[in-house]
Image 1: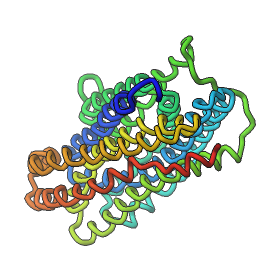
Image 2: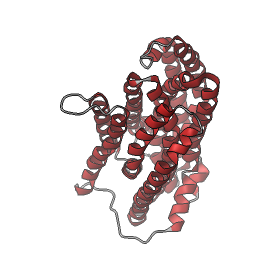
Image 3: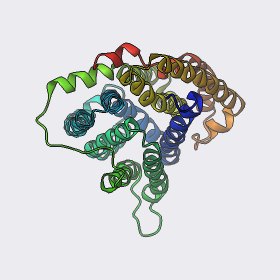
Image 4: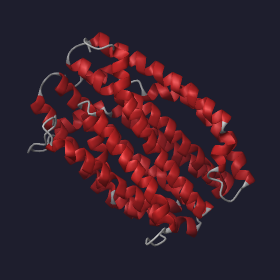
Length: 382
């Protein structure tokens, strides 16, 4: 922090995360684009399952942010042993979370979908997609943990490479598995779920290479489970958890109301809005996750002035990006909506058009939420 200007340092950490997380969010758009080509009912089913996936991810991201902060703090203080212990606990608890989520969500999904709709075709499509997606939840949770651990020790290039390769693999597999290109059978919405499930495996394989290199900065150790570390990481990640959970809860409530007000077309239109909102969220998260290890290391080294400067720079950068994003959405609303309107529904286009322009105004405020980690959270582990 004392040897390099702060803003270039923030850019060097944040830019790889912004790029990789943006591509990661784009594959959700690609998923929705190809699923929308199946039918409006398939798009509705996907929109109903997404909030449940977001709730599971909210827990994983919140916990991962906490582990990230702990590892960065201990690394900044030069305590490699405690950093390795925190990293090990992070991976173990992430896999356990994935196993529990898989069992619970697969069992509850048929009943959950019936709370929203009586359309048996939509329910069948939703169950088919979610059964495959949640079966691979332990792998997806492990991949999220690896991502946070590598951010904590400043290995942004490895994180970017892993996320990019996983996302690109998903984008390639979507049309292949959904529509059955070449020797592959046509799997429909199940193909979209399978593509999403396979990509984290590649990301983990790329990240794992780091542990066999001489420059390895993390080591997993044998350690009895620690309730104290679990509580600490949950405390540190509470802001990230609340931010992600609020998005999932909002989407669930919107889906419930829209099905009653406008039917499947309303949910499909909101699915279009939510998919582009994921890209904006990914960009702001990229800025936040690039700044977070630096801020945590500042606290580990007791450099409070550097932490405050990073916080202000992160918020300013996010506000500038929010202005650019709203300009793009306002200027290209109709072409964006048309990508998902395979049945050329005038009503869906109308709903999505007004929804996009109104919804994205909120990101001038949301960007500050995503990029404002609480200094008090960082001090609890000291």
